[in-house]
Length: 102
Image (tube, rainbow, N blue to C red; front, side, top):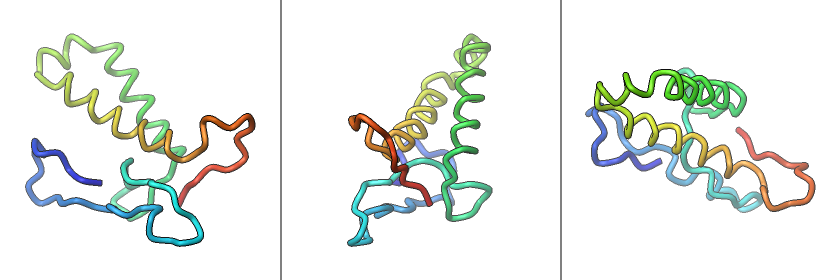
């Protein structure tokens, strides 16, 4: 997706700005989330686990994140990943029988 202005990694650029939107047979905005292991693919289960562990670290070590001035940043990272995961299925459906994934 589009990187924020406060991106601290100068060599990174925007990526996957049309994920899910360029295929006429399947049209769903899947911009966001994280690539796996430097590849150009997003795996939901490893991403979910990583976001769970990151979230748990904030619960356990919130004061440390605050002291380092990184609490807002880590919250933004968690939101970015979870917002993507929420896009991968129809949460308003009575039964979830389709999950969009790469």
